Image (tube, rainbow, N blue to C red):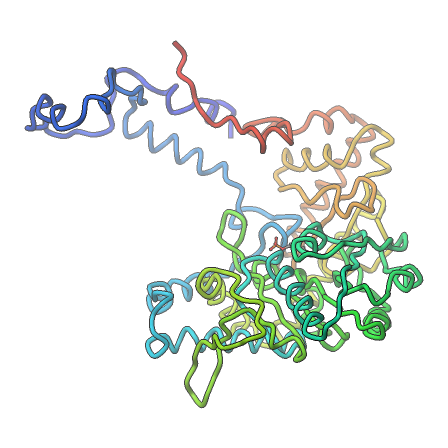
Length: 487
Ligand SMILES: *Cc1c(COP(=O)(O)O)cnc(C)c1O
């Protein structure tokens, strides 16, 4: 698209007297209308609205809509965390009038279908994760974490144990220490080995009777499976420490292994990552949390129960951590995830993990000659590159991400995990074809070549986007969204 087609605001297309409608003159005298409104609310002069034709309006907004980057038109190199395949079938199901138009306070007798869907979804998630019970209430992964840590807290309190600390590896997602602190615990960072794995000696040094939980992401944020995870959960349990698995990216292990079987007591799911519900601009999230039986009494209320063939909301749970979320969670997302799991079936879910892993390793292999790899593979569902080699030539991970925009790709995550210098985190997801992965790798290889031959091109990027580089802090903190007319 040429710059000229979007460099004008609708105000700048304005031409005095041009209109986009044709209506008969009003038969209400303006003087009457004015007398109905208090003087203080009347304008002295008409607002300066754009005066444009219907064509001007339609063409202007149609052009703008084409600037959107979306999963229906483009590939996202950090798929689960930003946007991946959102099956259209899920959307149809969520829009069925029986679900979409059901008031959340409809009496149980009249909402049996919705309650059944919630009960079955909780059961399927419990089976997928090897947990005993699941709450569907949390609206995000972060809120699932908060719910999980609050349940751990309630569990220790019920046993009259005063534990004050939660251990979190230094590779953790930022929400882990945040939700732990919000639940009232002191966060203690555990240093990882250079390859991103938990350092067992370091962990042992921290494990004492003051520790309430160890919270860990599997596969870790470097895209690696924790090889000694069973040893780790056993070490924790020996000290009465609960083990929390951040299961945001469960698509790497679906059908291969289960958090419950690895010894975890709590695990949250991101329906908007693993289970394909839209997120970001596409809709609200859902972060159900699963627990082992000993934590079940502490689940948020209400819990959907089944008695014979009747479903009900159980509020009489004296040890519950309480209610977390308006009504029963983001129900529309539950319908989508339920549809996805039922469509895929057990074999389908297993193939999700297989293909997610295959795709990430394909990218890692194709790029390992020109970029440094954070840790030697094979990886799981994502691979982490380091632009440290490029940085020596003056090109940073940010520059590379910006240059990708010029070449027609969304940017991957940069500078995360924090323990990798100049990190570029790439997760192609399970649904992308080899051709798409190749186009992306070609672009990355081209950028590496440009870094050596003409680094300025990469440093100056992006040049094809409507705006160039924004001030990354001020763009979010002091957004300038108002158009002021020229005098
Ligand atoms: C996305 C993510 C989270 C947080 O999930 P939200 O739904 O964004 O709150 C936590 N941990 C990991 C590893 C994640 O990828």
